[in-house]
Image (cartoon, rainbow, N blue to C red; front, side, top):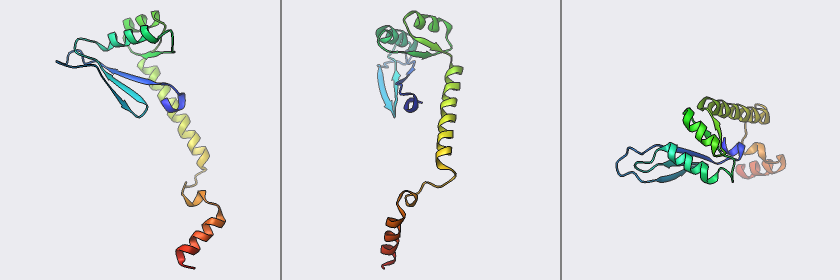
Length: 130
């Protein structure tokens, strides 16, 4: 979804009950995964993030927690439910699959299909030792 929508995705995991946990961020492809520190909830991290960046960037928070939705809305973020997020991801996947299917026209995408016929003929002659 990030590649098609040109958005940054941050997933926040709540590690506030993990003894000795420190705030940690890891990158996976185009997604940033954040693990909160001990005694810091994911909600607290999200609220602080929205408060800090909500007036600068468009931020959407996906949560089923009504109180959290209300708080992020007050600080300038948009909210979406997990169901809405799932539907959006499925729609993007469906659209991308459709684009690839239309472009391929049921043809295989091989190296040979991307080389002009004259060059392909010369390569075949070289392979045969002619």
